[in-house]
Length: 339
Ligand code: 13P
Image 1: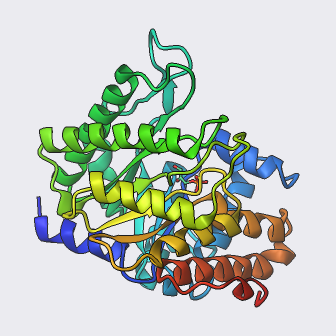
Image 2: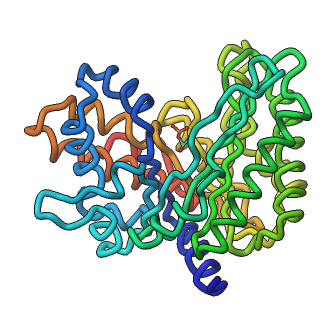
């Protein structure tokens, strides 16, 4: 384990004004996204789309890393350059999703535990050779009557910590993602209470497994009301709740927290991140690791037509720029117009 590389790379991922693009959708998930623009989920269409994302000019100004799916990390651009190398040449760190998805947690209806630890050491070794220097593992925590259970919180935190320890052994920065889901009619206060328990279990397990926090990044969900809750909070309230909770539960040794968008609109995700960064300096940097909030405008511009590739890349550049501004607390709504 080359500890200094872990720390350097973890800090690069959360460099001021840069964040992550999550482009690591599994095949069933990308199918949902492609369906929404009427494009068939074929290997050719997936490759065409991901080439658009990864070869977009100048995105390295705003993106420090891109999370890839197993299929993509093995693919190349039109000239034959492997896609991870396309990224490293631009100064973007290639990352890889290594979990095998959230599966039903036995005996706990409606709850899930993320699988993928078996064989992970060998897979990480291969991904390192393919260029990956950070990885992602996503756990999902649902809020509902009687949920989450301690069984769900503990099982997921344990798996995240085992994953993180294996990553660091392989000199790969673990991005640990316990996503508290936005689905449901829960209030922002209920989300805060569940997120507190989630982070408590996560950091206690990371400690138990000996994970070095200086070489780890937290991918967090924001403290936000459920989508079906009649009382939606303002960006200022989401920011205040999220940052104050993080100050209680997230150790200062961590270089940064990157947020997922989790079903927020692109503009909402940018506004919320901006409001957090307007609260002033924090012990960790606060940036983004969005999939839908960065990709939605790109997909809408592309719609499966190669003639739209340049417009789609411009849409990515624009959205990434706005989130970069939000990561610095300098975003304003009139920037939306300058497409
Ligand atoms: P969203 O931003 O669409 O929530 O995706 C982020 C992600 O990588 C979830 O694992």
